[in-house]
Length: 405
Image (cartoon, rainbow, N blue to C red; front, side):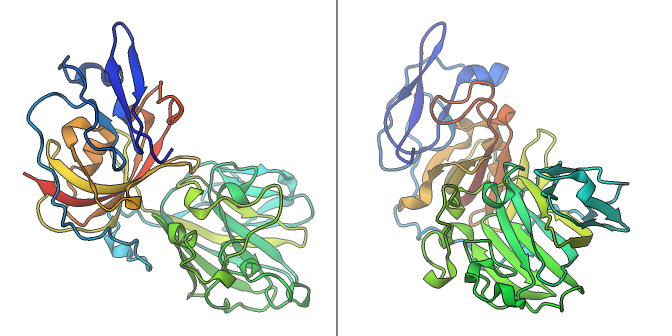
């Protein structure tokens, strides 16, 4: 799908989607807009350049050509290696995920509910067949803090951004929690110890664990394509999810599973999903499980996460802008990535889907945002054949390079 450009031609009474051939996003079907649709009935013009992805746009009206971005723009910004959470706007306070009685807000998947019991400000799992304890709510970008206690030979984990609650390890990302010093685990792969992204990325340093049967603290920071894991207040793992697939992490830290259900590439893991606590026959306890949601939700339903600040002129809803972006479906399917091309895309914000117009307006050059666009602000009930399913939520990471006036 990387080399696809989709535009529409006008046919009465129906609209026809015409695949012209180049990577990217799509022109927005007019009838999805309702009364806000453009009124021009002029013919469509084919794309003049097939060198890169097109943005998620409306059909462009005829008229004088819009100015193009200078060809001397610097190389695309490489995703930051270490999170600077001061850049994230609209922070909420930490919220206790076990603030209600019983297991309200959680569901047991692939296990017995009797294996999970509430204890004080947390939960205890014991016995075989516990499965996973999964949040009913979904989260995309957050800081998760908790304490956990494992018995001798204990083995557990916390999965994040799980698209399929019945398979959290590989439909999302599992952070491993283990009694690392137990003799039975002496010969595991590096990416199976505490703080690893399970079976994919080993911790950069050994977790400073308390002895078995004592409490440990853990913090998971998940922002954009950046993931950090702290154990007992020490950083043990920092991962740039898309870069990890490009072998920017040493080869001996990247592990794969030889099975019919091998892990997806990290770049294809879902950008949002549920949080899951893993049970184990030997038992595991979690307490003080608290989450700080980094999303800002607009009245329209658009969710915005600021990944990096910019400076200079502020983009307005009718401006022409140059930008780079990566687009995914909620299940992780990546359908566009302009970083594969040398230059950013230039587009008028009058020609893009509503979620983009609202989400990019207010940005400054150099700013990076994650936009979670509900179907009402994207491609609605129809989607786009062979590319965007009906009622699809779209997730973009957008980097604004230039505002043209």
